[in-house]
Image 1 (tube, rainbow, N blue to C red):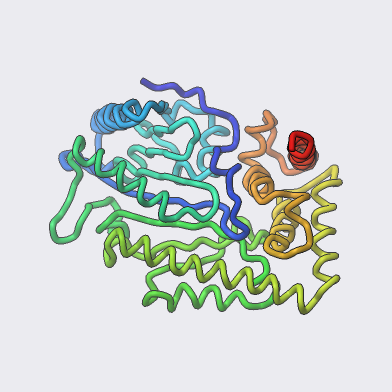
Image 2: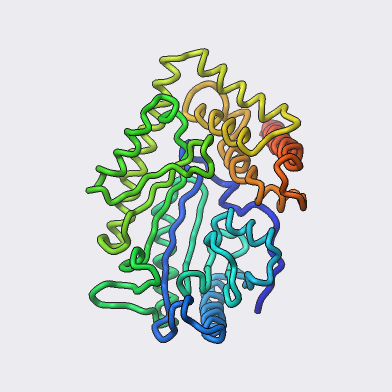
Length: 362
């Protein structure tokens, strides 16, 4: 069943965001088979059974839809490729153990992580602000799986998971957003308070320190236990919409306050991305964040770097991702600076060429 010929490219959702604030929307549903111990206590034979039964059911679902999925045994992947999956968020960042696997559809929008924490974690990701779409699709898929696989479920508590924090719906609805204007205008507390206060504090908003200079924040429901699936969707989407409004308003505020000073800062960041021959991960994150601050403002940045290209630069600049998609075996920061600069320039050039073709055809 296993393929293990992992696609060495960006996932399709990394290339499709057209939202000025949100880079990606993701849903996670955690499930366990009723008659098998949680993965931490399960035998290797038990884990192999989970893999086999889960793959058969998932494969049936996608075959009926005329689509294909592939199975990857994680312990058989090179460490660079395992790190690649972790950085793309397709598997959790814990060490890989025997008996763990991943089922992927070909666009890599739908992933099923097997025996890592829970028996089955369904993870669906789309570019931009599509929280309701990913959630509805996940619940449709989960209903199909639930008819074929007997999940551990309590009438009192809901779905039983290996972590008490996930018991209940087992659902996490997550949005990944870039909020440079709120940070640069010293209004970031407004964003954080929105999570603390909105809908009785049911949404967590926190900065992703790994991407420090990019001003990236995660928005997600705090507990899968206290709300139903529909309530989680409505609550997270409502807070996310307000957060987007705050960020876009902050961009307008900065432009009115700083005028040419802000435009100069944005265009210098664009020039760094377009002309650098050595580009560190930190510099790539900082400059793409400043560039994204131009989206929603009438200064013409979308013509130079479309939103979807800025998303590719953000995701692909990570050393663990960049090394794989460019075929660079070394992941030393100094070795990757030139590779990153070349890759970013090629993306920008491709964008220009596509635009010229489009204008010519039009």
